[in-house]
Length: 425
Image (cartoon, rainbow, N blue to C red; front, side, top):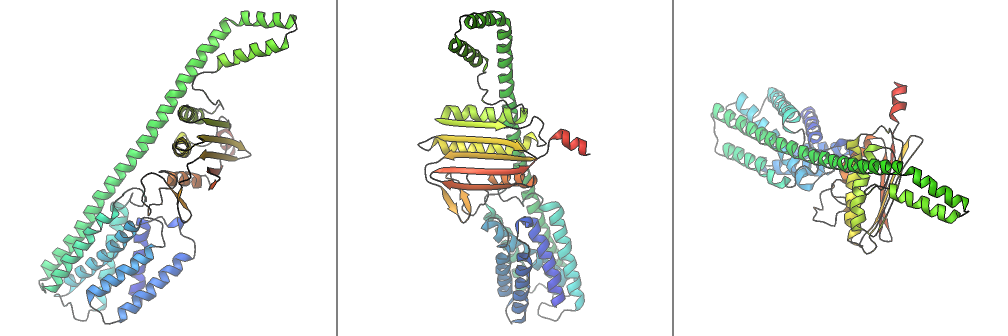
């Protein structure tokens, strides 16, 4: 019996990996949690209790086990209910396939084999086809609505058992039908989640195209001004020479400053040479200049950093969106951005003022907009989870702090230069 419980524990572990990101779980804690769960289940199984009581107890244990992972509480309850329900459906199907509904009788060892086989097949189908996108915490807002599916299914199964349906074909058909129903509904939900994720990615691409369009306009205006300066360069040089002959250094400096100001294109706030970051930051700074009182920016990066425009968009787009939204509601209306690269390390530092109404849950900052306190993706605005994911992709780290009404995000990522990476190949 203990061997069967260990085998089921393996199925439960695979189920949990379908629903949650196991990478964020501290090493060692998962072994302790699963060992405690196994001990609790074995202890309850030894007690003389009715099937509904054991079902509720085991579901509660699964819900407590799900606390090991990061995610919404509704999602954790759904995972516990689905896992326990699917295991119960598989057990009922095994009973009806092997026996004439001897619910209260003694079962042979073959029942455990066929039961585990059904559990493994169901989990494998869910893992491969039904839950490919639901692992994302922010993918569905109302996980609790899906809980009704396993709850109603289990209720139907209990009614079937209570009324002593002894026809194995009817029992097998109903049990298999409930399993297929659950798999189908979760497949549809997973497809909807996948469509939602693609919509979010499309929104990022749209903003990326907008930033490129803005940068193209900036470049075109800059080229036009350069052509105008080249046309009048002869006259400018004559004027500078005349001022130099008359020994008027201050007037020469003022004249050169006017030439520099004339060369600056409208909408061009930075010009690092990196087209991906210049286009995005210029677009965000154009908005910040209109809405904030104090905007400072310093960007110094190589032209060919080995980081995609899509990743730039997720990091700077989300963080600067949040910073501008928070700063414009504050009195100081302050925004500072620093991006620089040194010896394989990319540093990003974004500061903004805020109105002093930061919401914090444990070590997480919550958005001051409408939020769900159990949703870990809502940290200082939506999208921070994606930012952290991209930072981890480059083996980096991110720190968030707030001191004296100034919110600050510091990011360190290890990024190579494209030419250097090609040489190493």
